[in-house]
Length: 334
Ligand SMILES: NC(=O)c1ccc[n+]([C@@H]2O[C@H](COP(=O)([O-])OP(=O)(O)OC[C@H]3O[C@@H](n4cnc5c(N)ncnc54)[C@H](OP(=O)(O)O)[C@@H]3O)[C@@H](O)[C@H]2O)c1
Image 1: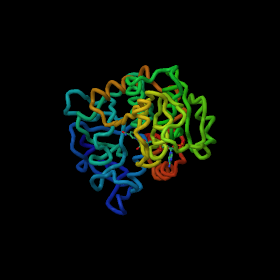
Image 2: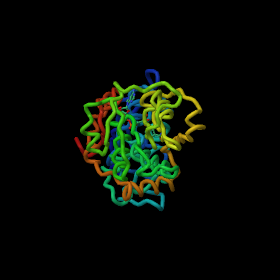
Image 3: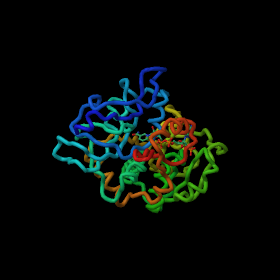
Image 4: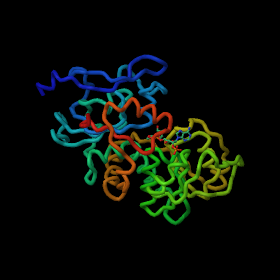
């Protein structure tokens, strides 16, 4: 590590400024690395909606300044004082305060506690693991939870909201592969060919669709994956079939929704919150499924690699909902 002790480490960091901080590229040194017992070299890191919010100072995500942005990373172990990991291992980290309390994924060399890491599961390349990233992990966890709550192919359509988003794109892929009839709700009607290619059998245009206001609308969905929140989550509760199950994990469309208890008490609708910052054994189980029976089929279509330098523009595009699918930083691209 002697040569690395003097090496400059490039990072995309958020500094104090504006309402919630301001992001920019910065250089760090080995002595600036956060606490931990495993030193890693970043291979790939995904670009998530939350990362864009942090980088552009649009929400309070960073709990300290400066902090390197990025809620997930796939990395190669360089040094380890944790017996579970050895130099050369490929590991995944996400959540655990990355990009908020601890330097996150957009940093060439990083240091993490071994307790936050899992090994890259069989069946996935480093690029594929971050093409999935937190978004795909959350989607897979949603499907796992929904199926434990009665979701089954043949019981009716499953609606995927914010359909062209990263998490939603993977949801369409995974659900259609499992035999579900998937209906995509999107603000980008021009993306219909993309959504059908992933496995959607129908695409609804959010901008022209009549959502209605009655406490119980016509029941349409046995399941819904919602990364959007806001009023559309309220509409989902009103349009679920009896004992339909909604997985809610996002707020791209707002944090508040109106509703009544009628869908819950008259239709037994199940509204499940999904939190990706899971304990390690659950991560290992869900990532294991992502490498096997929940392996996405269309990752090459959904995700594309970008150079580290491209991050600022991608952040702007994500906040403007202009991005289709997922962007993955490839640290080897110049
Ligand atoms: N709870 C957790 O642990 C967890 C984990 C992962 C992600 N998340 C959350 O999940 C959400 C999605 O993440 P992501 O990485 O998939 O983001 P993303 O790629 O930016 O996708 C969000 C999608 O939502 C739709 N959208 C954007 N603005 C909207 C609006 N005003 N109204 C309705 N739809 C809108 C757009 O799709 P269309 O144009 O196709 O409608 C957009 O592509 C974020 O809120 C993120 O923070 C939470």
